[in-house]
Length: 217
Image (cartoon, rainbow, N blue to C red; front, side, top):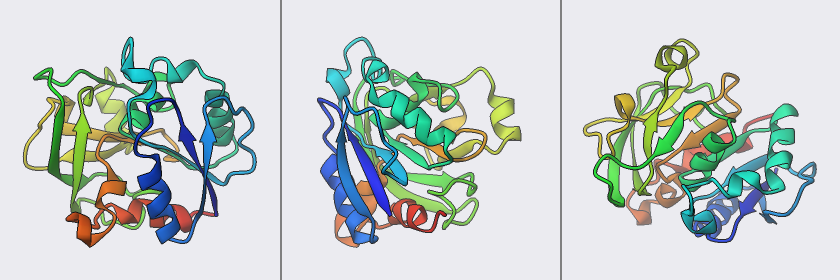
């Protein structure tokens, strides 16, 4: 499977994503922000980092680059799209997932390992987990607090993907830290599965996010 990894000025987790995608047997390629045509790719990953320095707000400038149109085309063609951390912020900014990821409640950058509950297994990225399974992955963000005005709709449509299990470090609504679109094709998560893809890193719980892509057809 050929997977496009989107690069913006300020992306810094692209190589980590490339590495784990190779581990699971994918054929990853880097794709720069000014590319419009993504038709060659079967799946897309938007990695973490600080696109355009997070000026204005996280994801705001990346949201108006040419590649966003290509990502939307991929979604309309039924291709899975995963946004991690800054990638999640970008997906929310362009309206491909509901709600927003805004400044942490304590207004500080948080970098720590967290226990998470898998709330939905309908996405290609969480299909290999069990519903309500507890997994461990790190977070690293200053604007990860999730908010939506349509929380009941998210519950009804099974669009809550991940939630913090034991504590709510950034003050997210109902401890939500990952959501998807109604179809489950577009998934936005603040924790970093690529940083929990091998046991030597402290956990390999995140690896299934990428193995799930490989099993999507």
